[in-house]
Picture 1: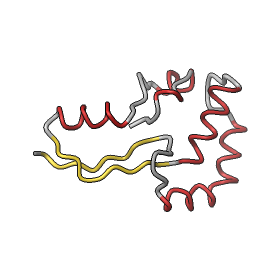
Picture 2 (picture 1 turned 60 degrees about the horizontal axis):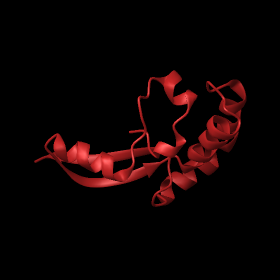
Picture 3 (picture 1 turned 135 degrees about the horizontal axis):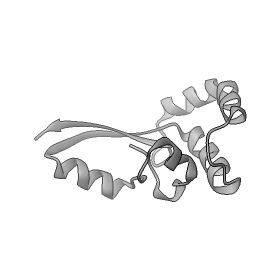
Length: 100
């Protein structure tokens, strides 16, 4: 799920995202659908920084070639940061849940 409502921008709209979720909303939606949350992980912390810079600071309307090339160049660092699972920092939430 897209994380951090404060990151919502035109790039989200272009991708078909209706909103970004904070932890409370995510938990309520998953549990409200009858699931028990087993694990939550934040994914792509480096992407969150790029999303903020592109979408909020530069007000980009879509993901362009520069962003894609920069992401490819920084991919080894992105992989390392994903493995660290930094709490609270990531472009997306990954939720592992079981039907209650």
